[in-house]
Length: 116
Image (cartoon, rainbow, N blue to C red):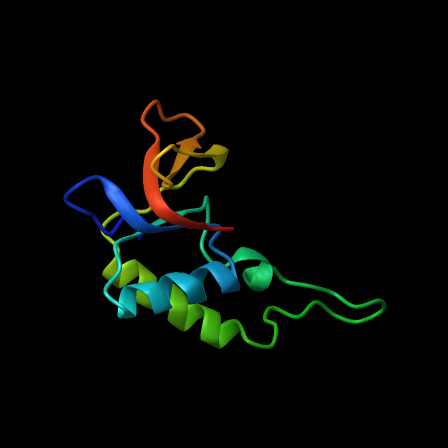
């Protein structure tokens, strides 16, 4: 979960964030055969957090959580590695690609498109 490797070092898509939207985008891109990098400390976003309404007992799941868990399973099975970090900076290169600097990593990743 994280990197679907590419030969030239440039990803078709870099997805920043592993919440429901990031997981759905990653799943769609993988199904389309794109080379994808997913940058997120954790998968699922806040959908996995328990929540509580005033004067009510806590509830462990929210609507849509099952679908998000299906996305998580697909992403975990189809990406080679999970970039468990956060983004320090995104910049556009002269060739139109994007460079994403990662916190705690000296080597940035490059992509044709970035989705936040």
